[in-house]
Image (cartoon, rainbow, N blue to C red; front, side, top):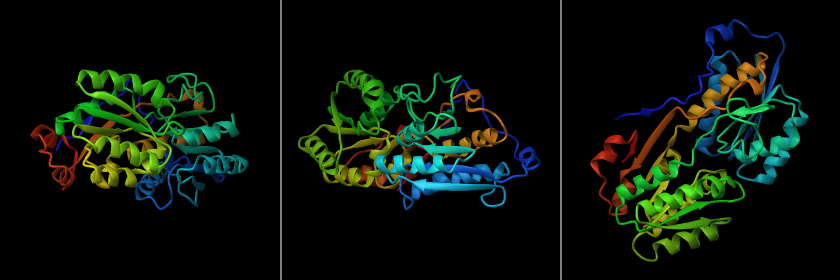
Amino acid sequence: MRRREFIAGIGSAAASPLAALGQQPGRMRRVGVLMALAETDPEAKAQLSAFTRGLAELGWLDGPTVRMDVRWAAGSIDRARVYAKELVDLQPDVIFADSTPEAAALHRETRTIPIVFVLVSDPIGEGFVAGLPRPGGNMTGFIPHEPALTGKWLELLTQIAPGVKRVAIMFNPDSAPYVESDYLPQFVAAARSFKAVPITAPVHSDAEIETAITSLGSEPGGGLIVMPGVYMNVHRATTISLVARNNVPAAYPSSDYVRDGGLLSYGPELGDFFHRAAAYVDRILRGTKPAELPVQLPVKFVMALNTKTAKALDLAVPPLILLRADEVIE
């Protein structure tokens, strides 16, 4: 199966592991880590492992050369704010932040300690950076998605489920405020081009997720696009269960949904962001300022397909989608 990659117009920040190993500083460095999901979430554990592996490849081993203080917000904005203050009070050399709410919580606490973020969709709109090539402050990192992807998700959804005539875009406006301003206009335009009725489905609880999905399944032709964001990821098991129960085909932003039983996903390889972020942390530990490190775009995109779920929904998978899928769950 083929893996599709595109290179953004921003250069790679990777440094040579051998050179890094030969330049170990004399004093112990300290790295704070604020993770969005729960410590028990297998995907979150794999992502943190990708980050620590990247640091190790550059000579930063937890214990011998660097001390890592890790906190898990478990999807709670309030918990993220508490842990952000806790990490800032430790005065680490750099803090690594996973997702928008965590980056926002840290941004409230410090404008001096360097922060490297991942999975932040709109760092300019959030006020984290002044611009992508020149962040201009104490924050830089990696953008996971672009609004144009809404059209791709809808295209794939209608290809595998051509009967979709009403499609909802589901998100939590508290943890993903950028959806309404950046993604929604693109979604409405894409839905109309595919002759589907666009539906906006902001959710704040399991009950609201259930109401929206039940409504979609109440008559034929309903489909769902789940937007990227911490809240929806934390509630992915609930969402996947409800779409299965109501026979609603759904497209997702990342492959962890598909591994958990979702139908189809397309998006950047999340583990790659965490691995690449280690190179930025390395450069900051060696003296580079965040303002000098451009915010980067995705370089690896993957499509995942769950054929068992497709069969349960009585959907025939088009050969082209099967051919293009990078990961197939059978």
